[in-house]
Length: 101
Image (cartoon, helix red, strand yellow):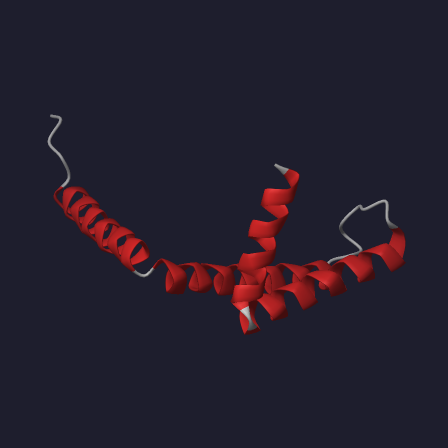
């Protein structure tokens, strides 16, 4: 009655092994892994700011049209910089966290 599904345990073991390998990769190659994560975050920022530009009429933001375009432009520039030079974003984020904590 409570038999496990034959596909579920295989996928859970596969995801566990993949998670161990990903964790070991991030442990031993932390500089490269952090730059990859920042570049992926930059891609997400560019994508979200493009959605923000396209859908600005549907979003209710009290900043007005000039504020929305300024905010989406800043997001696009931040995303492009984080894709091109991720080490600057890593350094500035660490610096800002150190200042404000």
